[in-house]
Length: 255
Ligand SMILES: C[S@@+](CC[C@H](N)C(=O)[O-])C[C@H]1O[C@@H](n2cnc3c(N)ncnc32)[C@H](O)[C@@H]1O
Image 1 (cartoon, rainbow, N blue to C red):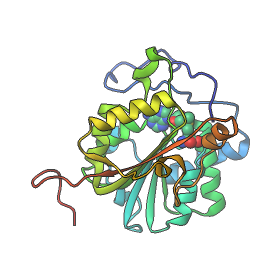
Image 2: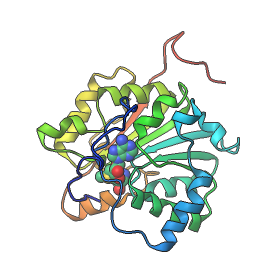
Image 3: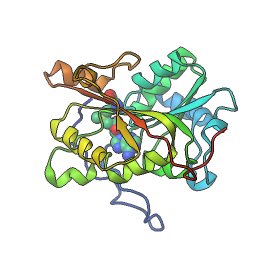
């Protein structure tokens, strides 16, 4: 799903009074939606939408699922949602929260949620960096960032989703022992991610041998972007990380 080069947010940046809002560089809209997809945005999205943290304050992940799930996983930038929908279908006792500002991708996920009758999906249709600070410490059991936009030009590197701050924010909301899965097809971004991880004391890379990062592990459904990258001859790298246990007195105690 490598799309035309994203431009700056329409409307010229943050509105007055929203100075803390991070700038989102991707596209929020693509081609015109079919009526069926628009209906899903009007009718299904309000039923499974994660409340705006600006209005709700703290967002407790388990409460979004009314106690019907035992743990919650987060996918950041789910694209068209094929990975998220497959994980939700395979793990009905897990709640899946997906963040994606691109409305066409969001509508594709909603179509899958409806088609498969998935009751364990919640959607934050915006920048994940607005939601993560509102999540309680150690409230997630797994996180996925699959093929984030690589921003290969050096002058655009600061637009990358994964950086030191993002990993620190993720470390706060992940439970001890939680798994993080990251994939990229961009060698420069891979080096960047590994450098960030080397500076991130909360994470350990679980790889033991090259096959661990060269092949998509079992239980990791493919994504649309990945399929396109592989079809175009690029190589994907799959990283599995562990959120290391907090020391005594660090973070909230979990039941
Ligand atoms: C290259 S696409 C990959 C999509 C999907 N993960 C896949 O593998 O097919 C990256 C996606 O991340 C989304 N994205 C970028 N920045 C984001 C952010 N801050 N929060 C949530 N999603 C974001 C983009 O809108 C885009 O859909």
